[in-house]
Structure formats: structure tokens, C-alpha cells
Length: 193
Image 1 (cartoon, rainbow, N blue to C red):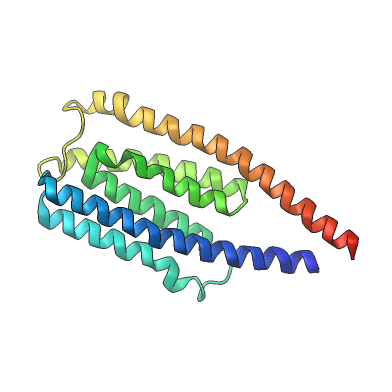
Image 2: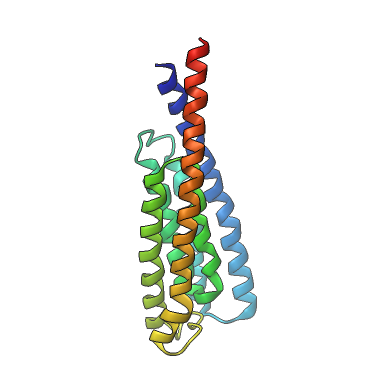
């Protein structure tokens, strides 16, 4: 009984940390907006619209975290993080590739190996979708690194997907270790009582 309460309390704290991370991600989005706006590399209306949508999406976990106290909030947070990264990657092209680290970092908070795999698969789909949309809108957004779609897939997108999978393996082992350690601490605490 006590272990269930500890795990439940830990899960609630993790949700609050995840929502705080999403709010901090909004600062990165605003920085991207400023640098892109100053650089004048993108259609300003599209840039402002996409960045505004991304900032609003980062606030959704904060708003709904207390309403959705069940286990589905972690999937919503990860899906929103991947959606935001896809929008950023569509609009900012190769300049926003680094943001794909964020969903994996948030997934690692949950000490759940399934979340890491879910995030890796969703991120991979997001990378491909963002690149395809970026090619369709290349006159309005920052153009892709390479003019040829196949070259861009091989030279930019494939390394990003490989990095996502390597990060997922690292996260998987970190989550596995932390989960085992947390369970050992809880078991030890119950033995002491």
C-alpha cells in the first residue's frame, strides 16, 4: 500500500516537472522566433503563427495536469512535445534539429521504458513528416539544407533519426537503472517498517 502511494506521489511530481519543462521549452521557442525574425529567412506571418501555436501548446500540460490525474497525461505531454518539435522543424528546417532531444528528455522523467520507445517512434515519424512538409512549403519557411529531397533525407534526416534511436537506447538504460533503483528504495523502506 505504502509503495503505491509513493509511486503515485512520485508520478504527480513528475507530471509537474514535465509541465515546468514544457514552459521552459517556450523560452527556447521564443529565442528561435527572435533569431529567425532578425535573420529574415522566413515568411513572418507563418513564422509568428507557428511560434504562437507552439507556445500555446507548451502551456497545455500546465493547464490540464490537475484535470487529467490519470496515467494518460504522460502520453499527452510527449505527443505535444513531438508535435511542437515537428512544427519547429517544419518552419525552421535544419536549424531546429537539436529540438528533437527535448521529447526524449521529458520521456526519461517518467522512469518508464515504454515511454522511451513511444517517444522514439513518435519522434521518428515527426522528423519525416516535418521534412516532407518543409519541402512542400520551402518558399515560405527556411528551405531545407539540400535542394534534392533524397539528399536531404540521407544527409540530414537519417542522421537525426539515428541520433534519436541512439538517445533512446541511452535513455532506455538510464530509465531502467533509475526505475530499478527507485523500486529498491521503496522495497527497502517497506522492509524497515
